[in-house]
Image 1: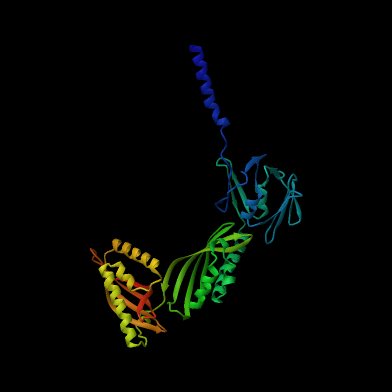
Image 2 (image 1 turned 60 degrees about the vertical axis):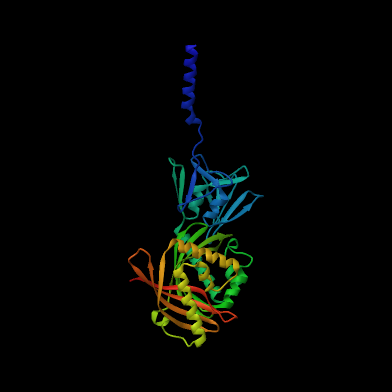
Length: 392
């Protein structure tokens, strides 16, 4: 019995010690310009000191348009100044019409064509570094291609701005990722063009991140009113996200990071010619607004604002209630001046002292309140813009 137990223990130890030999190796990971490449149709593998990878995703990440000839088993990648073709089973590739020897022939495996990774990285002007301990390959794509891509990306943003200034909604959205739009996008933009007459200037474009199929771009832009409904001139900071679709860059998202109203205090304090009855109604409504804000009465605050339907009013009430729960502020208007007045619309520059309960410091805020006149003659607040904010 003791001998049998000894044999069993020895067998168990041998099994435990043998596990590493049979354990699955860590998957090979590929990075292009620091971004991990996702492989969904098959995993990279090592054969005869050469890493083979599914061709399509690598070609696309390196900015190549993919062509597949199923009859001949040939895959071709094309760029602005490159054409490279590889054939299953052949150790000869064609690069811009010149035959080049491969370390290993492309392989068809489970419906996926695998190609030598280092070859395609170097053929596109990049470098590939294999780290056997971490089982990773880091590819640094060609900086020449990156420069060309940067030019193409900048051109898309500037062209989109041109179409926007020309009020051409169809052409504007031709530069936008279809997944980022809705059925009403063009109609909504056309309606905006009717209401607001403006021009936008791109002052600065800086590409802060560039991958094979995605880019992040920072811009500073100046937006100026030419006519239509009132809004102040502003300077914006934006972050654009662009994606490559079928070899072309498209705008996927635009996020405002910051904005500065360009109205000066002198402009805000210059009075417009306003009918006395309208002037009284406008300023009275603003007085009520600040009164209700100090009373923390969300329902009454919303009565001073232009209604966009009962549902929207309920949302606003909820937002103000949440604001009042978070902040205990007191507003003291110091100066109120109507500096814009036209066709049932007015803009008022207001300087007010703002103080939070329990805090010694107070602030002076300069703001623009845009109001409109309804059919029944009532003036209500459409929107507002912060112009300045300084500690007193």
